[in-house]
View 1 (cartoon, rainbow over the protein chains, first blue to last red):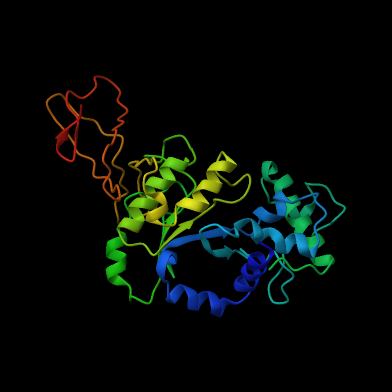
View 2: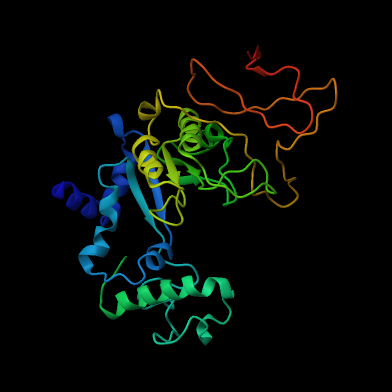
Length: 134
Length: 170
C-alpha cells in the first residue's frame, strides 16, 4: 500500500507521465475516472486542523486503489490559493487576526464570509509555514 | 483531454458524446463531465445525484464512447454526495462498463443548463399532455439490461399506457 501511495504521488507530480498514460490506455485501464478538487474546498474543510507537509501530500492517498486516473487540482480563480509570485494570492490584504467581516471580506456576502475566512486562513497558514499544497 | 460537460445546475444525461468523438482526433482523450447535482429542469429543487443515477449516467456516457468519466464536485466532504459510502462506490465502479455491469442504475431525463446566444433553452420536462395525446422521452441508457422499471411523475390523471422501447409496460 505504501509503495502504491508513493507511486501515485510521484505520478501526479509528473504531468508528462500523466499525458503519456492518457494517450495510450491499455487493457482494463482503457476507461476510468477523472476527479476535480476546486480551489477552496480543501482549505475551508481543513480549517482548524494542524496540517503538515505529509498530511497535505496525503490528500491524494484516499484515491489510491480506486478508478481515479487523473486528479484535476484547481490552483486559482482570480487569485491563487498558493503563494504565487506572479498573481495575487487570496490572502493579499488579509488580517490573520481579524474577524469574518474584516475589510478584505467586505464585498463577500455575509453568509459566505465564515467559509471564505477559513479558506483564506488555511491557505495563508500553509504559505507562512512554507508548505506548498500545489 | 476535452471534457464535455454542463455548467453546474444538473448532470446532463444526453450529451452527444458520439458526435464529440467524431469531431475530435483520436489522440484526444474525451471525458464526459458528470456534475454533482441532478434535476429535470431549472426550477426544480436542487438535489444531488445518488449512486444509482451516477451509475446510469456513467454507463450511458461510456457506452456512447467516452474515454473517461470526469466527476465534478464529487469531493471528499461538504461539496460531495450525501453519503460517503456512495462516493466510495462511485470511485470504484463508475469509470468502466465492466465494473458497472450487473449493478442497479437509474437513467434520468435532465436538461441542458447552458446554451449559446440566440439558441433556445430547452428542457424535456415538465410536459403538458392533453387527453388523447402522447409524448416520448428519449433517454440514453447504456448497455442493454434484462429488466427495467419506468418511473413517471404526473400531476392529474396517470397515462393510460406507458411503453418502453415500444413495448407496453406491465
